[in-house]
Figure 1 (cartoon, rainbow, N blue to C red):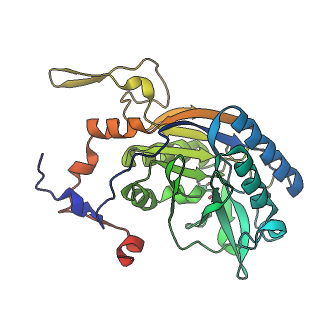
Figure 2: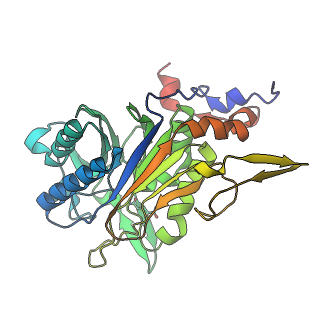
Figure 3: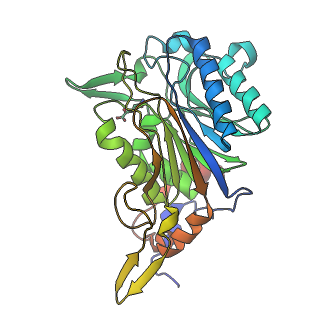
Length: 337
Ligand SMILES: NC(=O)CCC(=O)C(=O)O
């Protein structure tokens, strides 16, 4: 159906059509890890969790934000690694690289403090099935908040913000990366969707004030607005640590058993085999497919990318955008043309 509203122009440059990846259906693991001040233990512990996840069939493993170090400005400089130097200068990423190669899985390696050019970053490494570093995302939006009497945290005291969005083609689809606070900025997710992402991964450590209010809401919003999968992974909660994480690692996407769509007069009915799953009866996008509480655990859940196209056909937002009224500009893509 032709549109007079120029939906193509709502994205500048125009959106890249979503490609069909070689693997469309696979298992993802969200490793909600306990993190201690003992870095060697954290690395060995993460390795064991990844091995367990792969043993349960996961082809993609997601780790938490800052999993090799306590989450604190005092710790970041001490635990930071020179990822580009590799080897002994970055034992955390060397471990991820070895284990992904041995197990032939893709790892979205949560984040660790990175030291580079005299600066510190909060950095997520994506490792391919060959053990090679495919992409490095430096947290773009630093977590600087001050809610009096509740929580004050200033990542910018020690960390520098990253400069570029990160989207990467892996064996399990095109994945856009954000780290925790990055999830609050919908423009980043929109840019990833316009670049053809199937899945957004956000390692994150929300806190006990904003976590209960916003963590699930933001994940469901990013998934619903952009009609794709969203996966998050938090450290397990440790009430004795200086920063107490909310936990609740989650996978959001279209629920499988909700596809039967029936029209009765003008009323559209979505039949679901199961209730719940994040509330809302649509079955189109933004359902909570798997989640947990605050303790250490590994969530294994199925992703099926074929549902994305199917659901986008039912709810054709991309064809209905008003390019005559607004526009999302992806400066990086625009300037590289
Ligand atoms: N580590 C973070 O970026 C925490 C973000 C957070 O808690 C929020 O409310 O946003």
